Amino acid sequence: MKITDVRAVYPNYRQPLGGWRPYLWQIVVRVETDAGITGYGYGGGGVASVEVVNRHLRELLLDERCDSPTDIERLWDKLYTASIPYGRGGIAVMALSGIDLALWDLLGRAERQPVYALLGGSSAPRIRAYASGNDPEWFAEQGFSAHKVSCGRPAHAGDYERAAAMADESRRYLGADALLMFDCYMAWDAAATLKMAHTLAPYDIYWFEDTLTPDDLDGLAQLRPQIKPIQLAGGEHDFTHHRFAAIAAAGALDIWQPDVTWCGGVTATRRIIAQAQAAGATVVLHRGGEPWGLHVIAATECEKLGELVLGNRHRAPEALWLDAPQTENGYLTPTDAPGFGLRLNKELVD
Ligand SMILES: [Mg+2]
Image (cartoon, rainbow, N blue to C red; front, side):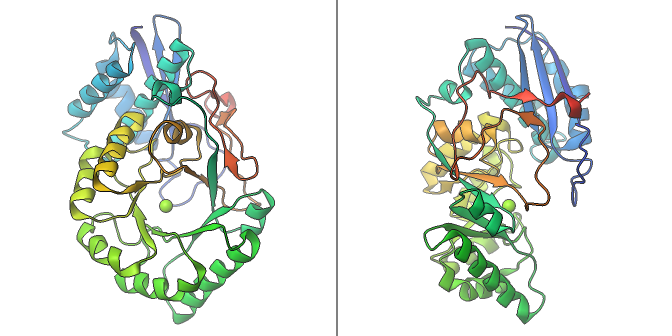
């Protein structure tokens, strides 16, 4: 197949998006071919990333062939190299991620194979889902057996007790055998992390996520052994195998959490997973319970654990993609439809 057009769009999200997201949330990338097959991808970086795709990366793809995983690897390298002057991470790689996922979807549709099969997976396993958000009663009602608490900066002594109360509430609804994690979105420093590890010791916490900023690899490496048996997790704000090489060299994290739609797509994620295996680190994909992550988890050595960011029962996420796998008793299975097996909700992109 020859690529005849590439277009990125920013959806008309109707739900309010928090923090940095209103103009910089997820994009949709369409890749069209002379075979009449269209691939759809999902990237990060919002309106800025749309400009990167439509004004630069698009022209590098026109008339290129895409007939095999090797072609996708070659195109990834071409786009990454061409965007080095303004890229190597952030919005440029979030844009590249959207293109990469569109190419994998395209190849899957052309070969009538789910992406996990293109990646060497032989069957669609059941993948345990974990719910991110602070409504454990609702998560328990839906059958989840794994939960990640969102926890802010502890400004007062009482905030540690409140964190313990959240852990206690989660254990009450989900049970003693549930996986329980804490994510502070870079709001803790080393002292707060150590105090949280002590405070939450009775609750058998699997990991602490995004404690220090991702720039402080030395700080993370020092912290890591001090909070055992709690694992130190991070990586959603890190991009490509080049950055994860630095994480490996520093020994910064036990659990690596690349985001398939941000870190450089399936192509970069596979390279990161290979590095993690060599480094003895575990990979638990950021938002891995979304369709793109499920295909990667199904076919690779990632931990079979997929995140769904659910928030709470009063604010269910907006469905940009239709036909995404839904949880059954707290487990997800990737679809075996061609590509990523999704339809775009056109109401949000026209
Ligand atoms: Mg996180």
